[in-house]
Picture 1 (tube, rainbow, N blue to C red):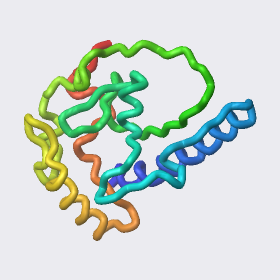
Picture 2 (cartoon, rainbow, N blue to C red):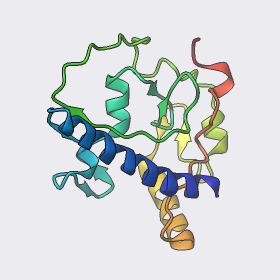
Picture 3 (cartoon, rainbow, N blue to C red):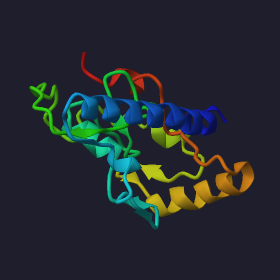
Length: 160
């Protein structure tokens, strides 16, 4: 149940922060846009044309886990927002090489998944989506599960 609230209320906070930061960069003379708040952002059949977790991966913030979520050194239960700016910012080198380096494949997310949508090969989006439809019907307007997420690294998976 906590995930349903964190997902909605967390997104409200991140949206406000995206707007604030975009305005700050624009006032400083740069171009700035938050893709997920832009009119060109779209979600069709549960697929969007912008992925905050893929941006986080490219930015060096984490890798992917079996459940396809972003997993950082601190765990996998975070909310992420992004802004594209025209400012030149020195990149921070990634601490990882592989797309799934922070996932130890420990199976913790497999055990926590109510519809059993995750196995050793990854997540079955159709099974997960069907389950999420039941949460939407029950808890509308809240939508989500998050049982496969963990706020701490999966059994000490991430390197320090």
